[in-house]
Length: 156
Image (cartoon, rainbow, N blue to C red; front, side, top):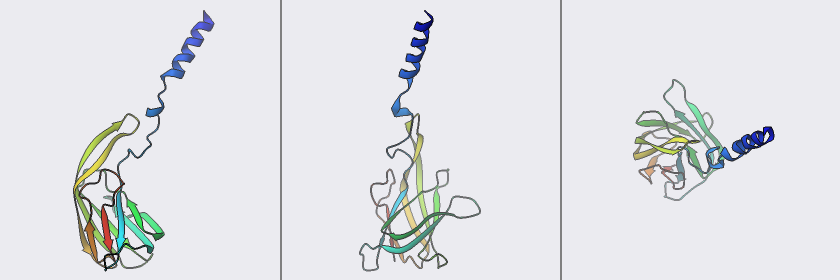
């Protein structure tokens, strides 16, 4: 009887775990904003260097991208109750900075017990507040629900 009880308990522990709920994978988290780059003549381009800082509501900026030879980047937006994210872009480490304000409406979507909730962004708008080196912004998608499509183009 003692061995039967031990075997029963071990079987319970082995079969009670579900692989799908253990780890949050397969892109179910809050999507980042996908940004690509264009030249003034409207052609896609690769930048030699790109540096992106984001204001997540604190007193200091957070560097989220420092990359060479970039044709696109993924920038995480704020996940709190703020209705906008400020993004600062430069092409040199100590160069001039372009400031953009990305405004949106957010909604929370339940994903799973392991992932919890994710944020989705709707009615997205982009305003270039300080040009140079970025000369214009072109919104390609007015909602951010995944990272598959390009959401924004920066024109240099």
